[in-house]
Length: 335
Ligand code: TRP
Image (cartoon, rainbow, N blue to C red; front, side, top):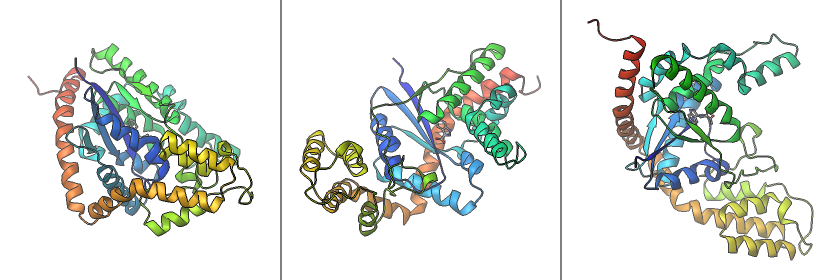
């Protein structure tokens, strides 16, 4: 039986935080070790340009995200790990798909609609500040996915609509030009924790409530100390289920450790002590990877080599498929 092809992209805007680690990176690295799966993980740097026009940030984030995945032990013999912009077949396919994608479909994309709604609410022109990049974003994402005939695409809930659009576009292309693309499916894993941030809302760069994954020890400790708690004193029983400290603890703890901490909450553990233990737990689990991360960032040429090797593997697949697709639409040598 051929392997399931699992593909996901990481937009290169921002520094990886604990929420990214628990929600996406940790499960993706685990999945890439399965013998029945061929995984494709890539740095979506073309997607980064949609929301970030600061070249230094795009570049820095690309370097940090690559170093993070490698430091955490992604085995690049199993997983094909590449940078989107190193695979020129993707933007070319994107154009062919653009010519098959219904404009009406793009009008319905949540991300675009949210921007329009915000403009209207602010009394601005509906299209104020909206680029064609944002508008066409789902088509580039469809090209990422269809380029490698991915079966499964692990994503957050906010991305499900984009996978459905990729299916729609693929079906339309297949119907017109013949069967070239697999119809992908979104996979949303409900067992994976959506981590809470410092203020108790979902940990997200846009809320400014994140704890970066590889903060130096001292800063990690400081950051954990900033997690918002209630004002209950040491000795007063605390509710684990409504506590961000406990929620993050649970994402890193064994079931036994989680049960022990729940008991400690009921028995009135002091917030300072609970946070100290949380720091120890996380620090123990990320400490070794943090050292590798620092070493990788000190040797960017090595990161680049790994990405180039990944691009070569990716292109071994994208080139022949694009060749077929070109011929299918009538773009080929004159004969
Ligand atoms: N848009 C996705 C996000 O912001 C990232 C992404 C780009 C992606 N291309 C993809 C995810 C292809 C899955 C498949 O999270």
